[in-house]
Length: 183
Picture (cartoon, rainbow, N blue to C red):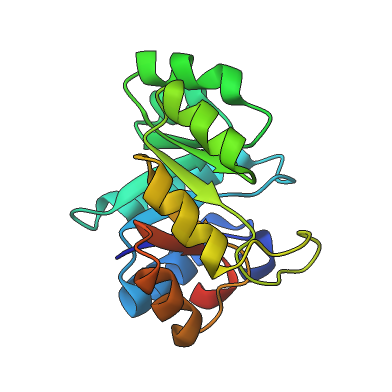
């Protein structure tokens, strides 16, 4: 099962060298397969994105994604972009740019739609209770969606321990994504 580490400004700094050191430590500790640089409030996003990508590229086989901006992801050679649930219209452009695409989804209809639009992966959330993220979908719903669709699904939301990871694995999800588990 794949591990998808999502950064959060709560756990990092906006200073490039310290950011790189903290990110490197988490990569060494958790060995994620996918990494997302996510920081919705940083005016210096592009600069830290360069640092993020440089650290990612030091690790063979790790897939590197930027948040919400296909053009920046392409320009910086990130390899992929993670779009939010209001950006379905950017899937085609991201694919034209040669990027892998992950899309945030919250309903079966959304997963079905982004699959038909050509996304490579989805995060489906929240699976477990997560602050300010609504009613959890639960493992049974995750099993149902994994069984009924062909797109690769990362379970997201409230995944903070190995018991939850095992439940996601037993549901046959492609992987799990988390912020808090990795920090």
